[in-house]
Amino acid sequence: MTTFLILIVVALLAIALWQLTKIFDLTQVGSRVNDTQVADDNDNKVNGYLMFAFLVFIYITTIYCVWNYGHFPLLSDSASEHGPLVDNLMIISLVLIFIVQTITQALLHYFAFKYRGREGQKALYFADNNKLEVIWSSIPAVVLAGLILYGLYAWNNIMFVDKEQEQDAIIIELYAKQFGWEARYAGTDNVLGKANVRYIEGVNNLGVDLSDPNAQDDFASTELHLPKGKRVIFKMRSQDVLHSAYMPHFRAQMNCVPGMVTTFSFIPTLTTTEMRERPAIVEKVANINAIRAKNSEKLVAKGEAALEPYTFDYLLLCNKICGASHYNMQMKIVVDTPEDFNKWMKEKQSKTIAAAVKVAAAEAAATEAQAAKPDTTSVTTTKDTTLVAHSTEVK
Image 1 (cartoon, rainbow, N blue to C red):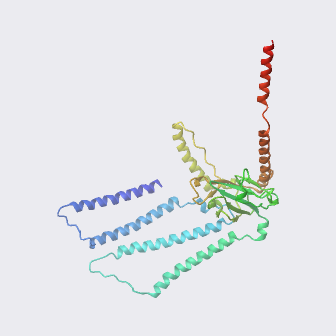
Image 2 (image 1 turned 120 degrees about the vertical axis):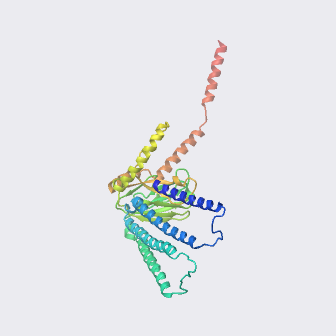
Image 3 (image 1 turned 30 degrees about the vertical axis):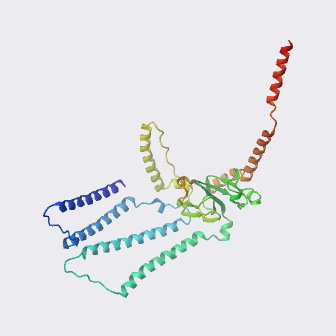
């Protein structure tokens, strides 16, 4: 990236110097300068060569960027069952765009060079050509229709969950609020209880309807755990503004809209441990830690604490600009083996939202009862002091 920026700076300096040269020519007395504001053959020739040179610059830059930055880990390391389908659609789109861009830019700049204006030359043009119009209209229409059909096929495969798949899936609610996430798991019954923002009070910050029998075994977590190889159905809500649940490694994104419940579903295919062992992720983590090590040296030299080493984790992010602390809205995702996930669920199932509300209510009642008791300590002390003083006077 540094080299690319240097090339841009050099190009801008060259343009600046060229403009200064033109200004210098204009200031020369008696110089033969075309000041009629009408392009002559020399101007057209210069512009033609500049267009051709810019075409060469575009392709050199493209080749350089593809060579140095053409490796995208996210296009080869999806962690969900439907991920390869999304990646294929993205790769096909990028390849088509690259081919079209290469051809059209080459023709545009080459024609600007080859057919530059010359004195006495008349342009050859077609007032109407039905054959050409059919060709250049049909080709984009067919290509776009193919992309749209493939996109609809991918969308239906991702979004459609039949009843059989739904019965075997895990139901998890993702609750969005400024500026954080919280997950609610259906307990042993695998049915989420009803919830509404009007029920939010105290520790019941998800607004769970505690009168609903299905809500009695629901529990909340600030860390999202998912089992590998099992379908997960997410029910998404928002407390305040429009958020977007974005899980890039799972190719999953769905808006969280206040006042309604949205749904998304996928099957994780790689545990967190397995993803950390992927070569692309290992390389990425090594590069990040190398940068952190250099920055840590500068911080330590200033007497500040060094940066902690980076460890890869799946993340749930918000992909909508939802306020001033939007960038902080993220939650760690842990993909476990089925055995580890079941173990984690057993540890959490006793910490239900209903139990937390009951404990909080009992503590509040105890605090109120304690506050209601009369304070007799000061009265007793006064009486004792009076008795001591009276006995002293008698003696």
